[in-house]
Length: 400
Image (tube, rainbow, N blue to C red; front, top):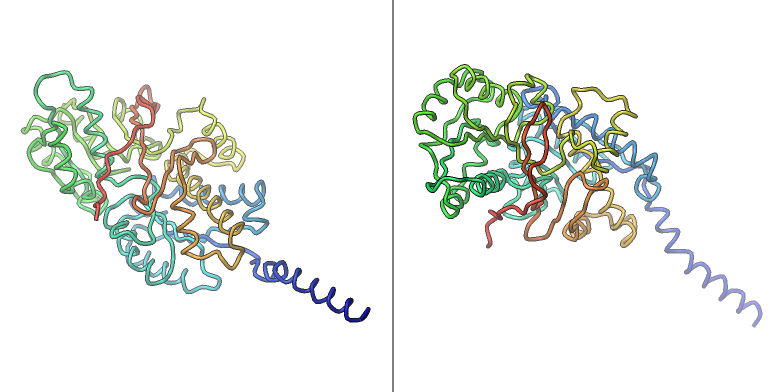
Protein backbone atom coordinates (compact mmCIF):
# COMPACT_ATOMS: atom_id res chain seq x y z
CA UNK A 1 0.00 0.00 0.00
CA UNK A 2 2.82 2.35 0.89
CA UNK A 3 4.39 1.83 -2.57
CA UNK A 4 1.03 2.42 -4.23
CA UNK A 5 0.55 5.67 -2.28
CA UNK A 6 4.01 6.88 -3.26
CA UNK A 7 3.29 6.00 -6.87
CA UNK A 8 0.02 7.94 -6.82
CA UNK A 9 1.75 10.98 -5.29
CA UNK A 10 4.41 10.90 -8.01
CA UNK A 11 1.79 10.54 -10.72
CA UNK A 12 -0.22 13.44 -9.29
CA UNK A 13 2.91 15.59 -9.12
CA UNK A 14 3.65 14.80 -12.74
CA UNK A 15 0.19 15.93 -13.82
CA UNK A 16 0.48 19.12 -11.78
CA UNK A 17 3.81 19.95 -13.41
CA UNK A 18 2.72 19.22 -16.96
CA UNK A 19 0.96 22.58 -17.74
CA UNK A 20 4.01 24.51 -16.56
CA UNK A 21 6.33 22.31 -18.59
CA UNK A 22 4.15 22.67 -21.70
CA UNK A 23 4.04 26.44 -21.23
CA UNK A 24 7.79 26.54 -20.79
CA UNK A 25 8.31 24.37 -23.85
CA UNK A 26 6.14 26.73 -25.95
CA UNK A 27 7.93 29.87 -24.82
CA UNK A 28 9.85 31.33 -27.79
CA UNK A 29 13.34 32.77 -27.64
CA UNK A 30 12.19 35.90 -29.46
CA UNK A 31 9.07 37.45 -31.01
CA UNK A 32 9.03 39.48 -34.24
CA UNK A 33 7.09 42.39 -35.71
CA UNK A 34 7.27 43.02 -39.47
CA UNK A 35 7.48 46.67 -40.58
CA UNK A 36 6.97 47.75 -44.20
CA UNK A 37 7.56 51.43 -44.96
CA UNK A 38 9.03 53.95 -47.37
CA UNK A 39 12.30 54.87 -45.69
CA UNK A 40 14.13 56.27 -48.72
CA UNK A 41 11.49 57.33 -51.29
CA UNK A 42 8.99 60.21 -51.62
CA UNK A 43 7.29 59.54 -48.27
CA UNK A 44 10.58 59.19 -46.40
CA UNK A 45 10.67 62.69 -44.80
CA UNK A 46 7.64 61.61 -42.77
CA UNK A 47 7.45 57.82 -42.90
CA UNK A 48 11.19 57.22 -42.66
CA UNK A 49 11.01 57.88 -38.92
CA UNK A 50 9.29 54.50 -38.56
CA UNK A 51 12.79 52.96 -38.51
CA UNK A 52 14.21 54.77 -35.45
CA UNK A 53 10.77 54.74 -33.80
CA UNK A 54 10.42 50.96 -33.86
CA UNK A 55 14.03 50.38 -32.92
CA UNK A 56 13.75 52.70 -29.91
CA UNK A 57 10.28 51.61 -28.79
CA UNK A 58 11.11 47.91 -28.72
CA UNK A 59 14.50 48.54 -27.19
CA UNK A 60 12.69 50.32 -24.36
CA UNK A 61 10.05 47.55 -24.09
CA UNK A 62 12.74 44.86 -24.00
CA UNK A 63 15.09 46.60 -21.56
CA UNK A 64 12.66 48.43 -19.28
CA UNK A 65 9.49 46.29 -19.46
CA UNK A 66 10.92 42.80 -19.93
CA UNK A 67 9.61 42.36 -23.46
CA UNK A 68 6.56 40.12 -23.53
CA UNK A 69 6.67 38.10 -20.28
CA UNK A 70 10.45 37.92 -20.52
CA UNK A 71 10.65 37.35 -24.29
CA UNK A 72 12.31 40.13 -26.32
CA UNK A 73 10.66 41.53 -29.44
CA UNK A 74 12.58 42.43 -32.60
CA UNK A 75 11.14 44.68 -35.33
CA UNK A 76 12.01 43.39 -38.82
CA UNK A 77 12.35 46.62 -40.81
CA UNK A 78 11.88 46.62 -44.59
CA UNK A 79 12.33 49.71 -46.81
CA UNK A 80 10.09 49.64 -49.90
CA UNK A 81 11.16 53.11 -51.20
CA UNK A 82 7.51 53.85 -51.94
CA UNK A 83 7.14 50.94 -54.39
CA UNK A 84 4.16 48.64 -53.97
CA UNK A 85 5.72 45.64 -55.75
CA UNK A 86 8.77 45.83 -53.49
CA UNK A 87 6.59 46.01 -50.37
CA UNK A 88 4.52 42.99 -51.43
CA UNK A 89 7.69 40.98 -52.08
CA UNK A 90 8.92 41.96 -48.62
CA UNK A 91 5.63 40.87 -47.10
CA UNK A 92 5.97 37.46 -48.76
CA UNK A 93 9.49 37.16 -47.40
CA UNK A 94 8.34 38.01 -43.87
CA UNK A 95 5.38 35.62 -43.67
CA UNK A 96 7.47 32.75 -45.06
CA UNK A 97 10.23 33.11 -42.53
CA UNK A 98 10.32 30.93 -39.42
CA UNK A 99 9.20 32.06 -36.96
CA UNK A 100 6.77 34.46 -38.63
CA UNK A 101 6.11 37.95 -37.29
CA UNK A 102 3.18 38.33 -34.90
CA UNK A 103 2.06 41.58 -36.55
CA UNK A 104 2.74 43.29 -39.88
CA UNK A 105 2.84 47.10 -39.55
CA UNK A 106 2.85 49.18 -42.74
CA UNK A 107 2.76 52.82 -43.80
CA UNK A 108 1.73 52.91 -47.45
CA UNK A 109 -1.96 53.03 -48.47
CA UNK A 110 -1.71 50.90 -51.66
CA UNK A 111 0.16 48.24 -49.72
CA UNK A 112 -2.44 48.24 -46.94
CA UNK A 113 -5.18 47.84 -49.56
CA UNK A 114 -3.39 44.94 -51.25
CA UNK A 115 -2.65 43.19 -47.97
CA UNK A 116 -6.16 43.30 -46.45
CA UNK A 117 -7.28 40.05 -48.18
CA UNK A 118 -3.79 38.56 -47.82
CA UNK A 119 -3.96 38.91 -44.04
CA UNK A 120 -7.01 36.65 -44.06
CA UNK A 121 -5.45 34.11 -46.43
CA UNK A 122 -2.21 34.04 -44.45
CA UNK A 123 -3.80 34.19 -40.98
CA UNK A 124 -1.89 37.39 -40.20
CA UNK A 125 -2.87 40.60 -38.40
CA UNK A 126 -1.93 44.03 -39.77
CA UNK A 127 -1.79 47.59 -38.45
CA UNK A 128 -1.59 50.42 -40.96
CA UNK A 129 -2.91 53.81 -42.05
CA UNK A 130 -6.62 54.63 -42.14
CA UNK A 131 -8.11 53.76 -45.52
CA UNK A 132 -11.55 52.25 -46.29
CA UNK A 133 -10.29 49.65 -48.76
CA UNK A 134 -7.60 48.64 -46.28
CA UNK A 135 -10.04 47.85 -43.45
CA UNK A 136 -13.31 47.02 -45.22
CA UNK A 137 -14.75 44.46 -45.61
CA UNK A 138 -13.67 43.96 -42.00
CA UNK A 139 -11.02 41.28 -41.63
CA UNK A 140 -7.65 41.21 -39.86
CA UNK A 141 -6.70 44.87 -40.39
CA UNK A 142 -6.52 47.73 -37.90
CA UNK A 143 -5.73 51.40 -38.43
CA UNK A 144 -3.39 53.48 -36.30
CA UNK A 145 -5.46 56.56 -37.08
CA UNK A 146 -8.96 57.22 -38.48
CA UNK A 147 -9.75 56.97 -42.18
CA UNK A 148 -8.61 59.89 -44.28
CA UNK A 149 -12.11 60.86 -45.40
CA UNK A 150 -13.20 60.89 -41.74
CA UNK A 151 -10.30 63.21 -40.93
CA UNK A 152 -11.48 65.67 -43.57
CA UNK A 153 -15.11 65.31 -42.48
CA UNK A 154 -13.90 66.16 -38.98
CA UNK A 155 -11.93 69.11 -40.40
CA UNK A 156 -14.93 70.47 -42.30
CA UNK A 157 -17.12 70.20 -39.21
CA UNK A 158 -14.51 72.06 -37.17
CA UNK A 159 -14.20 74.78 -39.85
CA UNK A 160 -17.99 75.16 -40.02
CA UNK A 161 -18.22 75.44 -36.23
CA UNK A 162 -15.91 78.48 -36.39
CA UNK A 163 -17.58 80.03 -39.46
CA UNK A 164 -19.11 83.49 -38.81
CA UNK A 165 -20.86 84.34 -42.09
CA UNK A 166 -24.49 83.45 -42.92
CA UNK A 167 -23.63 81.57 -46.13
CA UNK A 168 -22.07 78.12 -46.15
CA UNK A 169 -18.27 77.98 -46.16
CA UNK A 170 -16.65 76.68 -49.37
CA UNK A 171 -13.71 74.29 -49.40
CA UNK A 172 -11.23 73.84 -52.23
CA UNK A 173 -9.45 70.51 -52.62
CA UNK A 174 -6.00 69.93 -54.12
CA UNK A 175 -4.62 66.48 -53.42
CA UNK A 176 -2.28 63.81 -54.75
CA UNK A 177 -3.34 61.52 -57.56
CA UNK A 178 -2.48 58.47 -55.44
CA UNK A 179 -4.43 56.05 -53.25
CA UNK A 180 -3.44 58.17 -50.26
CA UNK A 181 -4.36 61.48 -51.89
CA UNK A 182 -7.69 60.27 -53.26
CA UNK A 183 -8.66 58.55 -50.00
CA UNK A 184 -10.44 61.70 -48.85
CA UNK A 185 -12.60 61.84 -51.98
CA UNK A 186 -15.29 59.35 -50.99
CA UNK A 187 -19.03 59.46 -51.46
CA UNK A 188 -19.47 59.39 -47.68
CA UNK A 189 -17.28 62.49 -47.32
CA UNK A 190 -19.17 64.49 -49.94
CA UNK A 191 -22.54 63.43 -48.50
CA UNK A 192 -21.40 64.34 -45.00
CA UNK A 193 -20.23 67.88 -45.78
CA UNK A 194 -23.60 68.58 -47.42
CA UNK A 195 -25.42 67.53 -44.25
CA UNK A 196 -23.34 69.91 -42.10
CA UNK A 197 -23.65 72.86 -44.48
CA UNK A 198 -20.23 72.97 -46.16
CA UNK A 199 -20.02 73.51 -49.93
CA UNK A 200 -17.39 72.23 -52.34
CA UNK A 201 -15.75 74.95 -54.40
CA UNK A 202 -15.61 73.64 -57.98
CA UNK A 203 -14.09 70.19 -58.38
CA UNK A 204 -11.24 68.46 -56.54
CA UNK A 205 -7.93 68.92 -58.33
CA UNK A 206 -5.16 66.30 -58.46
CA UNK A 207 -1.42 66.33 -59.01
CA UNK A 208 1.36 63.75 -59.19
CA UNK A 209 3.36 62.78 -56.14
CA UNK A 210 6.58 64.04 -57.73
CA UNK A 211 5.16 67.25 -59.25
CA UNK A 212 6.61 70.44 -57.79
CA UNK A 213 4.59 73.02 -59.76
CA UNK A 214 0.85 73.06 -59.08
CA UNK A 215 0.13 76.57 -60.36
CA UNK A 216 -2.39 75.41 -62.96
CA UNK A 217 -4.48 73.57 -60.39
CA UNK A 218 -4.27 76.43 -57.89
CA UNK A 219 -5.40 79.02 -60.43
CA UNK A 220 -8.43 76.91 -61.29
CA UNK A 221 -9.33 76.45 -57.61
CA UNK A 222 -8.88 80.15 -56.87
CA UNK A 223 -11.39 81.01 -59.61
CA UNK A 224 -14.01 79.05 -57.60
CA UNK A 225 -13.44 81.29 -54.54
CA UNK A 226 -12.94 78.78 -51.72
CA UNK A 227 -12.66 79.91 -48.10
CA UNK A 228 -10.10 77.25 -47.21
CA UNK A 229 -7.87 74.87 -49.18
CA UNK A 230 -7.50 71.24 -48.06
CA UNK A 231 -5.10 68.46 -49.11
CA UNK A 232 -4.58 64.80 -48.24
CA UNK A 233 -0.83 64.90 -48.89
CA UNK A 234 2.43 65.18 -47.01
CA UNK A 235 6.09 66.19 -47.27
CA UNK A 236 7.03 67.68 -50.67
CA UNK A 237 3.39 67.78 -51.75
CA UNK A 238 2.52 70.24 -48.96
CA UNK A 239 5.57 72.29 -49.86
CA UNK A 240 4.53 72.46 -53.53
CA UNK A 241 1.06 73.72 -52.60
CA UNK A 242 2.30 76.33 -50.15
CA UNK A 243 5.00 77.58 -52.52
CA UNK A 244 2.45 77.81 -55.32
CA UNK A 245 0.07 79.87 -53.19
CA UNK A 246 2.86 82.18 -52.10
CA UNK A 247 4.12 82.72 -55.63
CA UNK A 248 0.57 83.57 -56.73
CA UNK A 249 0.12 85.95 -53.82
CA UNK A 250 -2.88 83.90 -52.69
CA UNK A 251 -3.31 84.18 -48.93
CA UNK A 252 -5.83 81.40 -48.22
CA UNK A 253 -6.14 79.26 -45.07
CA UNK A 254 -4.57 75.87 -45.70
CA UNK A 255 -5.24 72.53 -44.00
CA UNK A 256 -3.41 69.27 -44.56
CA UNK A 257 -3.25 66.08 -42.52
CA UNK A 258 0.36 65.55 -43.64
CA UNK A 259 2.07 68.58 -42.11
CA UNK A 260 4.38 67.47 -39.33
CA UNK A 261 7.89 68.35 -38.19
CA UNK A 262 9.27 66.25 -41.04
CA UNK A 263 7.30 68.32 -43.56
CA UNK A 264 8.02 71.61 -41.81
CA UNK A 265 11.76 70.90 -41.89
CA UNK A 266 11.58 71.37 -45.68
CA UNK A 267 10.77 75.10 -45.25
CA UNK A 268 9.50 76.08 -41.77
CA UNK A 269 8.29 79.67 -42.45
CA UNK A 270 6.10 78.71 -45.41
CA UNK A 271 3.80 76.61 -43.20
CA UNK A 272 3.07 79.33 -40.66
CA UNK A 273 -0.65 79.56 -39.89
CA UNK A 274 -1.56 76.22 -41.49
CA UNK A 275 -4.09 73.89 -39.86
CA UNK A 276 -3.34 70.24 -39.12
CA UNK A 277 -5.83 67.59 -37.92
CA UNK A 278 -3.89 65.07 -35.86
CA UNK A 279 -4.66 61.71 -34.23
CA UNK A 280 -1.67 62.09 -31.90
CA UNK A 281 0.14 64.77 -29.93
CA UNK A 282 2.39 67.35 -31.51
CA UNK A 283 6.09 67.41 -30.78
CA UNK A 284 5.59 70.96 -29.53
CA UNK A 285 3.32 69.94 -26.64
CA UNK A 286 6.42 69.70 -24.48
CA UNK A 287 4.51 70.12 -21.20
CA UNK A 288 2.40 67.01 -21.79
CA UNK A 289 3.55 63.97 -19.73
CA UNK A 290 3.46 61.67 -22.77
CA UNK A 291 5.61 64.04 -24.81
CA UNK A 292 8.02 64.47 -21.93
CA UNK A 293 8.38 60.69 -21.83
CA UNK A 294 8.86 60.41 -25.59
CA UNK A 295 11.45 63.21 -25.72
CA UNK A 296 13.36 61.58 -22.88
CA UNK A 297 13.65 58.41 -24.98
CA UNK A 298 14.30 60.38 -28.17
CA UNK A 299 17.26 62.11 -26.54
CA UNK A 300 18.47 58.97 -24.75
CA UNK A 301 18.76 57.18 -28.08
CA UNK A 302 20.51 60.18 -29.70
CA UNK A 303 17.91 60.84 -32.38
CA UNK A 304 18.21 63.83 -34.70
CA UNK A 305 15.97 66.60 -36.03
CA UNK A 306 15.20 64.50 -39.11
CA UNK A 307 13.75 61.74 -36.91
CA UNK A 308 11.24 64.13 -35.33
CA UNK A 309 8.27 63.18 -37.50
CA UNK A 310 4.85 61.78 -36.75
CA UNK A 311 5.74 58.22 -37.73
CA UNK A 312 8.40 58.06 -35.02
CA UNK A 313 5.51 58.67 -32.63
CA UNK A 314 3.21 56.19 -34.42
CA UNK A 315 5.88 53.51 -34.11
CA UNK A 316 5.86 53.99 -30.32
CA UNK A 317 2.04 53.98 -30.38
CA UNK A 318 1.90 50.71 -32.34
CA UNK A 319 4.53 49.11 -30.12
CA UNK A 320 2.50 50.03 -27.02
CA UNK A 321 -0.67 48.46 -28.43
CA UNK A 322 1.19 45.34 -29.57
CA UNK A 323 2.86 44.97 -26.18
CA UNK A 324 -0.50 45.36 -24.45
CA UNK A 325 -2.41 42.78 -26.51
CA UNK A 326 0.43 40.24 -26.77
CA UNK A 327 0.91 40.34 -23.00
CA UNK A 328 -2.83 39.92 -22.39
CA UNK A 329 -3.07 37.01 -24.83
CA UNK A 330 -0.10 35.16 -23.31
CA UNK A 331 -1.46 35.68 -19.79
CA UNK A 332 -4.85 34.32 -20.81
CA UNK A 333 -3.99 31.60 -23.33
CA UNK A 334 -0.28 30.83 -22.89
CA UNK A 335 2.37 31.00 -25.61
CA UNK A 336 0.57 28.53 -27.85
CA UNK A 337 -2.45 30.84 -27.76
CA UNK A 338 -0.57 33.72 -29.41
CA UNK A 339 -2.74 33.41 -32.54
CA UNK A 340 -4.39 35.88 -34.88
CA UNK A 341 -7.81 34.91 -33.51
CA UNK A 342 -6.81 35.67 -29.93
CA UNK A 343 -4.90 38.81 -30.86
CA UNK A 344 -7.97 40.15 -32.68
CA UNK A 345 -10.13 39.43 -29.65
CA UNK A 346 -7.71 41.40 -27.47
CA UNK A 347 -7.45 44.24 -30.01
CA UNK A 348 -11.24 44.51 -30.08
CA UNK A 349 -11.23 45.12 -26.31
CA UNK A 350 -8.86 48.10 -26.44
CA UNK A 351 -10.84 51.05 -25.08
CA UNK A 352 -9.68 54.63 -24.41
CA UNK A 353 -6.09 53.39 -24.29
CA UNK A 354 -3.58 56.22 -23.80
CA UNK A 355 -0.17 54.88 -24.93
CA UNK A 356 2.78 56.10 -22.90
CA UNK A 357 0.56 58.47 -20.92
CA UNK A 358 -1.48 59.87 -23.79
CA UNK A 359 0.41 60.11 -27.09
CA UNK A 360 -2.97 59.35 -28.64
CA UNK A 361 -6.37 57.96 -27.66
CA UNK A 362 -7.25 54.51 -28.98
CA UNK A 363 -10.43 52.46 -29.03
CA UNK A 364 -10.94 49.42 -31.28
CA UNK A 365 -13.99 47.20 -31.71
CA UNK A 366 -14.96 44.42 -34.09
CA UNK A 367 -17.25 46.88 -35.87
CA UNK A 368 -14.73 49.73 -35.94
CA UNK A 369 -11.07 48.63 -36.17
CA UNK A 370 -9.98 52.28 -36.25
CA UNK A 371 -9.39 55.01 -33.66
CA UNK A 372 -12.17 57.55 -33.28
CA UNK A 373 -10.54 60.72 -31.92
CA UNK A 374 -8.42 63.58 -33.25
CA UNK A 375 -7.45 67.13 -32.33
CA UNK A 376 -7.13 70.21 -34.51
CA UNK A 377 -3.79 72.00 -34.47
CA UNK A 378 -2.41 75.21 -35.94
CA UNK A 379 1.16 76.23 -36.70
CA UNK A 380 2.03 79.29 -34.64
CA UNK A 381 5.52 80.77 -34.52
CA UNK A 382 6.93 77.58 -35.98
CA UNK A 383 5.16 75.30 -33.51
CA UNK A 384 2.28 72.87 -34.08
CA UNK A 385 -0.06 73.64 -31.20
CA UNK A 386 -3.53 72.27 -30.30
CA UNK A 387 -6.56 74.50 -30.71
CA UNK A 388 -9.07 71.83 -29.59
CA UNK A 389 -9.17 68.90 -27.18
CA UNK A 390 -9.79 65.30 -28.35
CA UNK A 391 -12.92 65.31 -30.51
CA UNK A 392 -14.86 62.32 -31.83
CA UNK A 393 -14.73 61.64 -35.54
CA UNK A 394 -17.66 61.11 -37.89
CA UNK A 395 -17.95 57.39 -38.64
CA UNK A 396 -17.77 56.68 -42.38
CA UNK A 397 -17.43 52.88 -42.17
CA UNK A 398 -20.26 51.02 -43.93
CA UNK A 399 -22.82 49.70 -41.47
CA UNK A 400 -23.50 46.34 -43.14
